[in-house]
Amino acid sequence: MKQVQIAAYGMPETVAQCVDVEDVGVPDASEVVFEVLAFPINPADINFCLGIYRTRPPLPAVPGAECVGRVLRTGAGVTSVKAGDLVINLMRENWAQRRRVSEQDIIRLPDDIDLRQAAMVRINPPTAYLLLKDFVALGPDDWIIQNAANSAVGRLIISMAKKQGVRTINVTRRDDVFSELNALGADICLLDGDDLAERASRRLKGAPIRLGFDAVGGESTKQIGQAICDEGVLVSYGSMSHSAPTVNLADLSFRGITHKGFMLGRALARRDRAGVQAIYDELVAQILDRTIYAPVEAVYPIEKIREALAHSQRPAHGGKILVAPNGMV
Ligand SMILES: NC(=O)c1ccc[n+]([C@@H]2O[C@H](COP(=O)([O-])OP(=O)(O)OC[C@H]3O[C@@H](n4cnc5c(N)ncnc54)[C@H](OP(=O)(O)O)[C@@H]3O)[C@@H](O)[C@H]2O)c1
Image 1 (cartoon, rainbow, N blue to C red):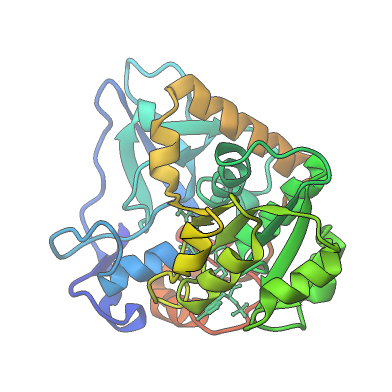
Image 2: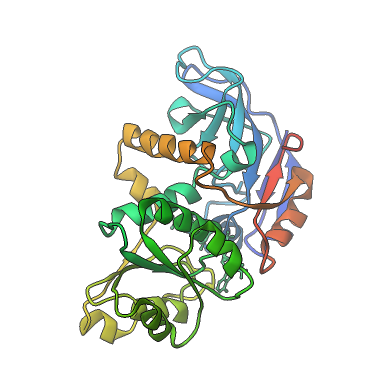
């Protein structure tokens, strides 16, 4: 079967290659074999290839934090899924044509879910959902602010916040996405930059911004930290600029803001299996009723992984790049 491997850490489109490896074999009693129908290329996968992600396994290594698959075979003791069911895998190394995994690591999806959306349900939707849930108890008409607002996570935050009645200030590095974000329910869109706090405050006429999300790092973190209210919470969950987040001491000490970090794995680990299942059940329902949706720009075959990786790193793309290892989805 085909699998994507990196033989060195470096530029993803250079170090990744599609190789032939032995098939996954038959499942043990508690295991499931599924064919991978599609996987997205996320910023975390790029960082994994670069060798700057939190896990840096020995080489050669197989990237791939998420995928959607269809069950081919199940072990004798498996009860929660059967051949033909759609599943997502909570474990990594998914850039391959087939996976053999433990039953406890997979979540069954409904048959009628859109496959492209299903390929992206494992990471970004629960990230947006838990960012909104785990830090500040937000009520209707509360304001939040976020940078990288046109990212997949940013768009999900807009849609979910809108559904909860929470208002969003959405900060981007280009203004040609404002109309799309407004159509999703964004209340205010602003360009990133030096006087962000002032511009936001003018638009809000003094209303407090209790929570800010940062996925850019560097100076952009500082702008979000300045924009939130005294005692507000700033959550860093990504670093698209590859720069460490900067926060003003004055914001931390004089104004008492709190700067926290978020990682999906940690947030899910605080929940039991039933709690994790309940989150995915809710998110899948939101995909089915189209409350949440992530745009896709292109789908590549697994043999074209290098082209797919190069494409995913171009600025200003219009949606996720997916790879379909077993034929187009
Ligand atoms: N902590 C967690 O558990 C967790 C989970 C999921 C995602 N994340 C993080 O969330 C972030 C967004 O992920 P995603 O999948 O939603 O991303 P995505 O859809 O690929 O979008 C990337 C976004 O980053 C912007 N961007 C790229 N380089 C930038 C730079 N140098 N300065 C400012 N903005 C830049 C892009 O803007 P343009 O459109 O202008 O190019 C785009 O809005 C990533 O940092 C990812 O690692 C974290």
